[in-house]
Picture 1 (cartoon, one colour):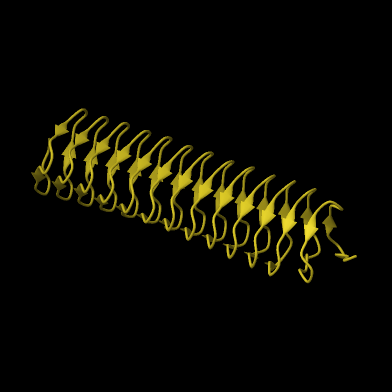
Picture 2: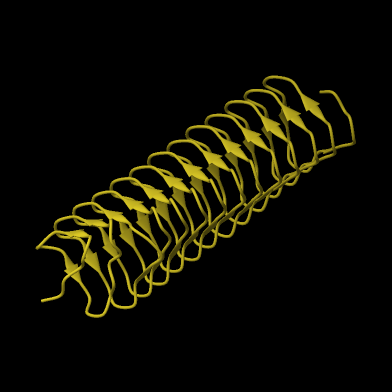
Length: 243
Protein backbone atom coordinates (compact mmCIF):
# COMPACT_ATOMS: atom_id res chain seq x y z
CA UNK A 1 0.00 0.00 0.00
CA UNK A 2 1.37 3.39 -1.00
CA UNK A 3 2.39 5.85 1.67
CA UNK A 4 2.70 9.62 1.41
CA UNK A 5 5.09 10.94 4.07
CA UNK A 6 4.04 14.26 5.53
CA UNK A 7 0.65 14.25 3.80
CA UNK A 8 -2.78 13.53 5.26
CA UNK A 9 -4.51 11.15 2.88
CA UNK A 10 -7.89 9.66 3.79
CA UNK A 11 -7.96 5.87 3.67
CA UNK A 12 -11.00 6.11 1.41
CA UNK A 13 -9.26 8.35 -1.14
CA UNK A 14 -8.16 6.78 -4.42
CA UNK A 15 -4.69 7.77 -5.62
CA UNK A 16 -3.47 6.35 -8.93
CA UNK A 17 -0.26 4.32 -8.77
CA UNK A 18 2.85 6.39 -9.24
CA UNK A 19 1.24 9.71 -8.31
CA UNK A 20 3.27 11.58 -5.69
CA UNK A 21 1.35 13.49 -3.04
CA UNK A 22 3.55 16.29 -1.62
CA UNK A 23 4.12 16.72 2.11
CA UNK A 24 1.64 19.10 3.69
CA UNK A 25 -1.20 18.02 1.41
CA UNK A 26 -4.66 17.08 2.70
CA UNK A 27 -6.67 14.61 0.62
CA UNK A 28 -10.23 14.10 1.91
CA UNK A 29 -12.49 11.07 2.00
CA UNK A 30 -13.54 9.71 -1.35
CA UNK A 31 -11.24 12.02 -3.28
CA UNK A 32 -9.86 10.66 -6.55
CA UNK A 33 -6.52 11.43 -8.21
CA UNK A 34 -6.20 9.94 -11.70
CA UNK A 35 -3.01 8.74 -13.40
CA UNK A 36 -0.57 11.35 -14.58
CA UNK A 37 -1.64 14.05 -12.11
CA UNK A 38 1.28 16.14 -10.87
CA UNK A 39 1.69 18.48 -7.91
CA UNK A 40 4.25 21.28 -7.59
CA UNK A 41 3.54 21.66 -3.87
CA UNK A 42 1.00 20.87 -1.16
CA UNK A 43 -2.67 20.86 -2.11
CA UNK A 44 -6.00 20.45 -0.34
CA UNK A 45 -8.78 18.27 -1.77
CA UNK A 46 -12.16 18.12 -0.05
CA UNK A 47 -14.40 15.11 0.24
CA UNK A 48 -15.25 13.62 -3.13
CA UNK A 49 -13.07 15.98 -5.15
CA UNK A 50 -11.72 14.47 -8.38
CA UNK A 51 -8.66 15.26 -10.49
CA UNK A 52 -8.75 13.74 -13.97
CA UNK A 53 -5.79 12.33 -15.87
CA UNK A 54 -2.73 14.53 -16.37
CA UNK A 55 -4.00 17.45 -14.30
CA UNK A 56 -1.23 19.80 -13.13
CA UNK A 57 -1.58 21.55 -9.77
CA UNK A 58 0.60 24.35 -8.47
CA UNK A 59 1.33 24.79 -4.78
CA UNK A 60 -1.48 25.95 -2.55
CA UNK A 61 -4.35 24.72 -4.72
CA UNK A 62 -7.55 24.23 -2.69
CA UNK A 63 -10.40 22.13 -4.09
CA UNK A 64 -13.65 22.05 -2.13
CA UNK A 65 -15.90 19.04 -1.73
CA UNK A 66 -17.06 17.38 -4.94
CA UNK A 67 -15.01 19.58 -7.24
CA UNK A 68 -14.46 17.90 -10.60
CA UNK A 69 -11.42 18.71 -12.77
CA UNK A 70 -11.31 17.18 -16.23
CA UNK A 71 -8.28 15.72 -17.93
CA UNK A 72 -5.40 18.01 -18.79
CA UNK A 73 -6.42 20.93 -16.58
CA UNK A 74 -3.66 23.26 -15.39
CA UNK A 75 -4.23 24.90 -12.02
CA UNK A 76 -1.71 27.58 -11.06
CA UNK A 77 -0.51 28.39 -7.56
CA UNK A 78 -3.16 29.21 -4.97
CA UNK A 79 -6.15 28.47 -7.18
CA UNK A 80 -9.33 27.98 -5.13
CA UNK A 81 -12.40 26.04 -6.32
CA UNK A 82 -15.57 26.10 -4.22
CA UNK A 83 -17.79 23.14 -3.49
CA UNK A 84 -19.26 21.49 -6.57
CA UNK A 85 -17.28 23.45 -9.14
CA UNK A 86 -16.82 21.62 -12.45
CA UNK A 87 -13.87 22.23 -14.79
CA UNK A 88 -14.01 20.60 -18.19
CA UNK A 89 -11.01 19.14 -19.94
CA UNK A 90 -7.98 21.34 -20.61
CA UNK A 91 -9.11 24.30 -18.52
CA UNK A 92 -6.25 26.61 -17.50
CA UNK A 93 -6.42 28.70 -14.32
CA UNK A 94 -3.68 31.23 -13.62
CA UNK A 95 -2.29 31.99 -10.16
CA UNK A 96 -4.80 33.14 -7.61
CA UNK A 97 -7.96 32.29 -9.53
CA UNK A 98 -10.99 31.96 -7.25
CA UNK A 99 -13.99 29.94 -8.43
CA UNK A 100 -17.07 29.99 -6.21
CA UNK A 101 -19.35 27.07 -5.47
CA UNK A 102 -20.98 25.35 -8.44
CA UNK A 103 -19.06 27.32 -11.05
CA UNK A 104 -18.84 25.53 -14.40
CA UNK A 105 -16.01 26.06 -16.89
CA UNK A 106 -16.32 24.49 -20.32
CA UNK A 107 -13.49 22.69 -22.03
CA UNK A 108 -10.53 24.80 -23.06
CA UNK A 109 -11.34 27.84 -20.93
CA UNK A 110 -8.37 30.02 -20.02
CA UNK A 111 -8.61 32.18 -16.89
CA UNK A 112 -5.81 34.66 -16.27
CA UNK A 113 -4.26 35.42 -12.90
CA UNK A 114 -6.59 36.54 -10.10
CA UNK A 115 -9.83 36.02 -12.01
CA UNK A 116 -12.81 35.58 -9.68
CA UNK A 117 -16.08 33.83 -10.53
CA UNK A 118 -19.04 34.06 -8.19
CA UNK A 119 -21.30 31.19 -7.20
CA UNK A 120 -23.15 29.52 -10.04
CA UNK A 121 -21.33 31.27 -12.87
CA UNK A 122 -21.19 29.26 -16.11
CA UNK A 123 -18.51 29.69 -18.78
CA UNK A 124 -18.95 27.99 -22.14
CA UNK A 125 -16.15 26.24 -24.01
CA UNK A 126 -13.02 28.18 -24.97
CA UNK A 127 -13.86 31.33 -23.00
CA UNK A 128 -10.77 33.44 -22.33
CA UNK A 129 -10.76 35.82 -19.36
CA UNK A 130 -7.90 38.27 -18.87
CA UNK A 131 -6.08 39.06 -15.66
CA UNK A 132 -8.17 40.35 -12.79
CA UNK A 133 -11.64 39.81 -14.24
CA UNK A 134 -14.38 39.80 -11.61
CA UNK A 135 -17.50 37.86 -12.58
CA UNK A 136 -20.40 38.09 -10.15
CA UNK A 137 -22.74 35.29 -9.11
CA UNK A 138 -24.81 33.53 -11.76
CA UNK A 139 -23.06 35.08 -14.74
CA UNK A 140 -23.41 33.13 -18.00
CA UNK A 141 -20.84 33.55 -20.78
CA UNK A 142 -21.22 31.76 -24.10
CA UNK A 143 -18.54 29.78 -25.85
CA UNK A 144 -15.65 31.45 -27.62
CA UNK A 145 -15.87 34.78 -25.81
CA UNK A 146 -12.78 36.94 -25.29
CA UNK A 147 -13.07 38.89 -22.04
CA UNK A 148 -10.26 41.40 -21.54
CA UNK A 149 -8.33 42.15 -18.36
CA UNK A 150 -10.08 43.76 -15.39
CA UNK A 151 -13.58 43.38 -16.79
CA UNK A 152 -16.32 43.43 -14.13
CA UNK A 153 -19.66 41.64 -14.58
CA UNK A 154 -22.44 42.09 -12.03
CA UNK A 155 -24.82 39.41 -10.85
CA UNK A 156 -26.88 37.72 -13.52
CA UNK A 157 -25.06 39.09 -16.56
CA UNK A 158 -25.69 37.02 -19.71
CA UNK A 159 -23.21 37.18 -22.60
CA UNK A 160 -23.84 35.30 -25.84
CA UNK A 161 -21.24 33.33 -27.79
CA UNK A 162 -18.25 34.86 -29.57
CA UNK A 163 -18.46 38.23 -27.82
CA UNK A 164 -15.35 40.40 -27.43
CA UNK A 165 -15.21 42.60 -24.35
CA UNK A 166 -12.32 45.04 -24.02
CA UNK A 167 -10.16 45.80 -21.03
CA UNK A 168 -11.77 47.54 -18.08
CA UNK A 169 -15.40 47.17 -19.11
CA UNK A 170 -18.01 47.32 -16.37
CA UNK A 171 -21.27 45.45 -16.98
CA UNK A 172 -23.89 46.03 -14.30
CA UNK A 173 -26.32 43.46 -12.94
CA UNK A 174 -28.61 41.65 -15.36
CA UNK A 175 -27.00 43.06 -18.49
CA UNK A 176 -27.72 40.98 -21.61
CA UNK A 177 -25.23 40.95 -24.50
CA UNK A 178 -26.14 39.18 -27.73
CA UNK A 179 -23.84 36.88 -29.63
CA UNK A 180 -21.08 38.37 -31.74
CA UNK A 181 -21.02 41.78 -30.05
CA UNK A 182 -17.79 43.76 -29.94
CA UNK A 183 -17.47 45.92 -26.83
CA UNK A 184 -14.48 48.23 -26.69
CA UNK A 185 -12.30 49.01 -23.69
CA UNK A 186 -13.72 50.87 -20.69
CA UNK A 187 -17.34 50.63 -21.75
CA UNK A 188 -19.85 50.95 -18.91
CA UNK A 189 -23.29 49.31 -19.07
CA UNK A 190 -25.80 50.11 -16.35
CA UNK A 191 -28.16 47.60 -14.82
CA UNK A 192 -30.51 45.89 -17.22
CA UNK A 193 -28.89 47.02 -20.49
CA UNK A 194 -29.83 44.81 -23.45
CA UNK A 195 -27.61 44.64 -26.53
CA UNK A 196 -28.83 42.65 -29.52
CA UNK A 197 -26.61 40.42 -31.64
CA UNK A 198 -23.57 41.90 -33.39
CA UNK A 199 -23.72 45.30 -31.69
CA UNK A 200 -20.46 47.28 -31.74
CA UNK A 201 -19.65 49.71 -28.91
CA UNK A 202 -16.55 51.86 -29.19
CA UNK A 203 -14.12 52.64 -26.41
CA UNK A 204 -15.41 54.59 -23.45
CA UNK A 205 -19.14 54.37 -24.15
CA UNK A 206 -21.44 54.92 -21.20
CA UNK A 207 -24.82 53.20 -21.43
CA UNK A 208 -27.28 54.04 -18.66
CA UNK A 209 -29.65 51.59 -16.99
CA UNK A 210 -32.16 49.76 -19.16
CA UNK A 211 -30.77 50.95 -22.48
CA UNK A 212 -31.87 48.69 -25.35
CA UNK A 213 -30.06 48.35 -28.68
CA UNK A 214 -31.26 46.26 -31.59
CA UNK A 215 -29.04 43.92 -33.49
CA UNK A 216 -26.29 45.36 -35.65
CA UNK A 217 -26.08 48.80 -34.04
CA UNK A 218 -22.72 50.55 -34.38
CA UNK A 219 -21.90 52.95 -31.57
CA UNK A 220 -18.74 55.01 -31.83
CA UNK A 221 -16.28 55.84 -29.05
CA UNK A 222 -17.40 57.88 -26.04
CA UNK A 223 -21.10 57.77 -26.84
CA UNK A 224 -23.41 58.39 -23.87
CA UNK A 225 -26.91 56.93 -23.66
CA UNK A 226 -29.20 58.00 -20.86
CA UNK A 227 -31.43 55.71 -18.88
CA UNK A 228 -34.01 53.83 -20.91
CA UNK A 229 -32.85 54.90 -24.39
CA UNK A 230 -34.07 52.49 -27.09
CA UNK A 231 -32.32 52.10 -30.45
CA UNK A 232 -33.72 49.90 -33.20
CA UNK A 233 -31.66 47.51 -35.29
CA UNK A 234 -28.68 48.74 -37.33
CA UNK A 235 -28.59 52.27 -35.87
CA UNK A 236 -25.25 54.08 -36.23
CA UNK A 237 -24.06 56.73 -33.74
CA UNK A 238 -20.81 58.63 -34.33
CA UNK A 239 -18.10 59.41 -31.83
CA UNK A 240 -19.14 61.43 -28.80
CA UNK A 241 -22.89 61.42 -29.40
CA UNK A 242 -25.04 62.17 -26.36
CA UNK A 243 -28.42 60.43 -26.47
